[in-house]
Length: 78
Image 1 (cartoon, rainbow, N blue to C red):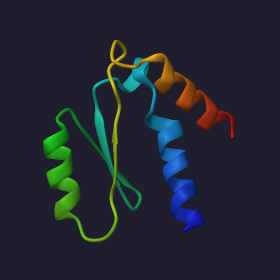
Image 2 (cartoon, helix red, strand yellow):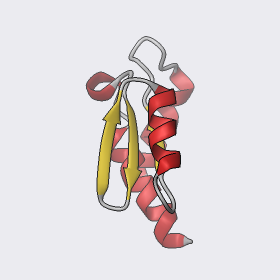
Image 3 (cartoon, one colour):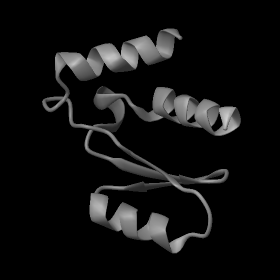
Image 4 (cartoon, rainbow, N blue to C red):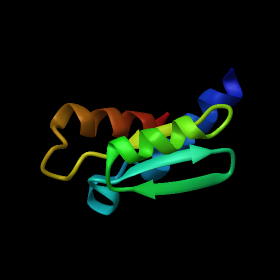
């Protein structure tokens, strides 16, 4: 379980940047990362893959509020 948690933390730290990836959705399956602009397409792709997939939906810059920004900052510091 710790390994999965570590990988999720790593991917969130890598992709949760509203300036760079705002509005995009990432599906991570094993070592493969796919990028989508639509959440429903990403969800369908993740559900079609066997095993565990991680879906990260990055908010657009204007959608990211102070709470979200603090969460990401704390995650990166830990």
